[in-house]
Image 1: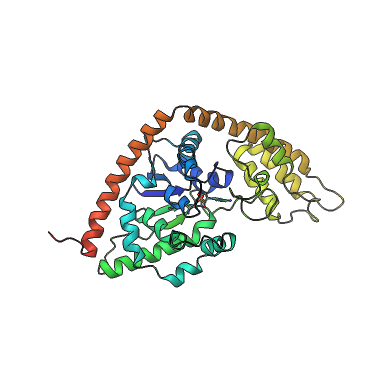
Image 2: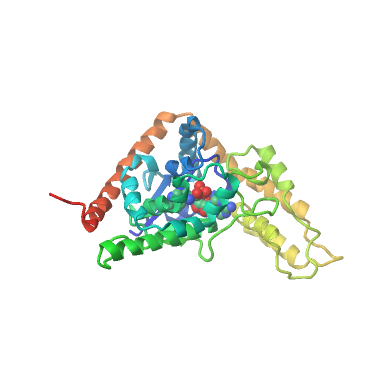
Length: 339
Ligand code: TYM
């Protein structure tokens, strides 16, 4: 079975961006592929969160992923800090990562702008740790959103340098590819106000969290950005309108989507057929129905920390077995083997 892997930082509630970029891929892949999904708790330390929150945040990410349909008996679901082999690989890869390229990383530059008082070395080497996460299981495909594309390119570079320097060109660490199971481009779900990607950190009213209550969901969707409708029939959609259609395709019936597509395509200035108010109302109701079982299941799982602990323990054992095998190969290639 081909190996696929992804990581999610425990920095808050999961939102629809995370669902589209990462989780959804595995719902369709968990039987046919050898799947690894982990909670990137070390990565979240780079921005100095309150670590008292960490335990709840990690449990929440595990619970939300299971509630979405990930089956921990089928896949390897684990926590990054449970696999110390990752930190050893991170150390070797750090020798192959250059200060200049790390400083040029988009996510690093963004963090420097946001928090000029906390430009720590962990933040600088964030992509190196991410590469170690992937390479430790020699995963070939990595389902992620568009925002992680550059990190994946860096992971490929580090793998290539490792193989060149220590493997005499032999592929000890395969080069991983960013991946979207549904095919085509990597996905970027927009914030509901149309400004940039949906994210955990910006205004919560523009982000749909999987566990949002029904009334809040309705309020958020009804406030999503729209306009007066297209000027001509069959116009290309502005990205914030395309975004609503993307969300609708996830939760609404094919007939509903087709109806609004047709209305959109038949609209023009003075003859606007598509009614965005109606579209958002429908989207809101379908979203409420889609997310309700996920919210309920999450709460049920969170009420049973013991069961969640067992899942994490089992995930740890599976993940460490695979990681130990890679570290053995890595140590041998690097030459740190003396007796
Ligand atoms: P994180 O925790 O920010 O996000 C988790 C996943 O959700 C995707 N995502 C989105 N996709 C589409 N549209 C959006 N608006 C959107 N927002 C988030 C992200 O692309 C990601 O797939 N660095 C990673 C965590 C990580 C990782 C890894 C990922 C650590 N090690 C190894 C893959 C492999 C991150 O911060 O994701």
